[in-house]
Image 1 (cartoon, rainbow, N blue to C red):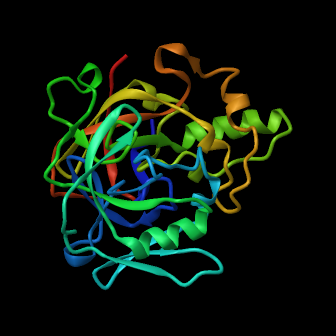
Image 2 (image 1 turned 45 degrees about the vertical axis):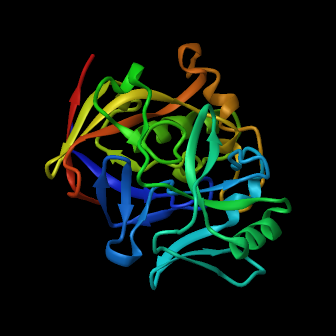
Amino acid sequence: MPATRITALNVYPVKSCRGLSLPAARVATRGLVAESGPDAVWDREWLIIDRDGRFVTQRDNPRLALIHTGAAGGALTLTTAGRPPLRVSLAPLQGPTRDVVVWNSVIPARDAGDDAAAWLSAVVGGDVRLMRFDAAHHRLCNPEYAGDSGAHTAFADGYPLLVISEASLADLNHRLANNGAPRLPMNRFRPNIVLAGLEPYDEDHVDTLTANGVSIKIVKPCARCQITTTDQDSGHVGIEPLRTLGSYRMDERFGGVTFGMNAIVVAGEGRSLSVGMDVDASLAF
């Protein structure tokens, strides 16, 4: 079998907005970190909420796909066509925390201010606010899958990492073509780590990924939602790939169709992964 290697690393600073494709990323318990020092941004560190404090994603508003994220000069930057950029300081936010809701989790967060709220509300066409995860809080992953590892995450749906192999996407695209549907890019699935060298869906059977002193444990299949049907370049919503995935990847134990695997960091916090790095993939059949 060819060597397994990393072919892409992605960080999504604001949940459901566009991500950053990176040549290398630092590893933390709650996910990947882009950059370092004053420009460091963590995966799903920021969240958009509605007036009731509940999370807003592309499921609710596909226009979030058109918001690009970045970090420069000590600020988180958000850009989209037709509006001046928004800059939000990456210095620790002051003021009291407010509880926000992501699925069934109630999480303390800090408000990024009225300017950020006004900018986002104008872009998405609703009353929303931008919140930042309170790093003093540990939002533990489900112990049913993470065990007593102490794994925790910020505003991700449930786990700090999502792993997908290129071969799995190639197989899906072959099936889509047979159904008369266009091929889809990997960004439909918003992975953090993309791997080459595995057979299609081998990530379903990986126990641990190890590279550069980092150990990542695969813990649970990722159930896929409507976001996978949203074109990340246009915001247009279709029906694929859920229709095709439903024909061969349905697993009611995990809430529907699955594609990609959720994972946690068990060793190597503070070390880095890079694109092109070989990975030891330990299979557990």
